[in-house]
Amino acid sequence: MPMSAPEQVAAAQAAGLDILCGLTSKALDGPQKVAELNSQTMKWTLAEARECTRKAFDGKDAVDLLAMEASFLPPVVEKVQAYGGQLFEIAAATRADFAKVAEVQHEASKRLVLDHIDAATKGAPAGSGAAMAAWPPKSPTSKLPGLSRPCPAHGFWSPLG
Image (cartoon, rainbow, N blue to C red; front, side, top):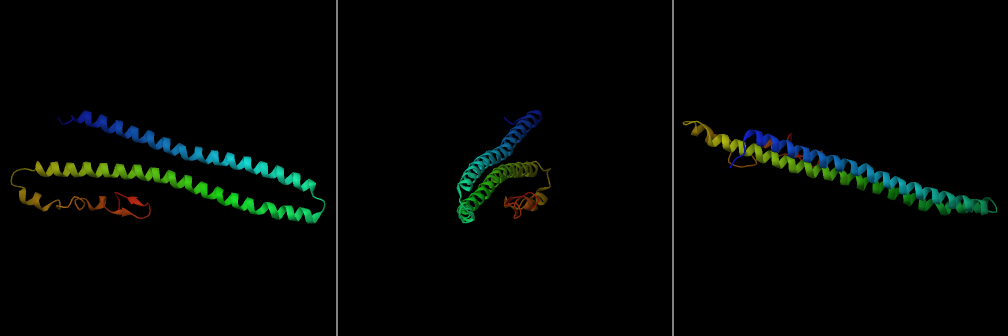
């Protein structure tokens, strides 16, 4: 049994609210992960600074200090690179989550529009068979060409092409 118009509106609003809550949750996950990464980085930095300071006080002369400085530099560079990589992974994962939701919503909207087109075609007035046969094209993806073009800038299917 088909749903009435108010039921369809209520269902659409409920689905929209679910999507909004899901995206909000995903949007908050990214900054939370960045905050955790920053906390870990600050703890590591403080520990390294403490160790470096201890060794500096233990140094006997300038040669010892230069040797100590040279020994601490490579691990710091590695940690900075790892931090950047983890930051990129967090951003990429957040973007992928949003792109996945956008793609699912796009496909659902596309299906809905195509169903409405099919219903309009079936409910066309008598005598309009020739006009309805000419439109839309038979291929489901060519019925709405703007809904089937990839958006290279964003990496997912875009209704605007």
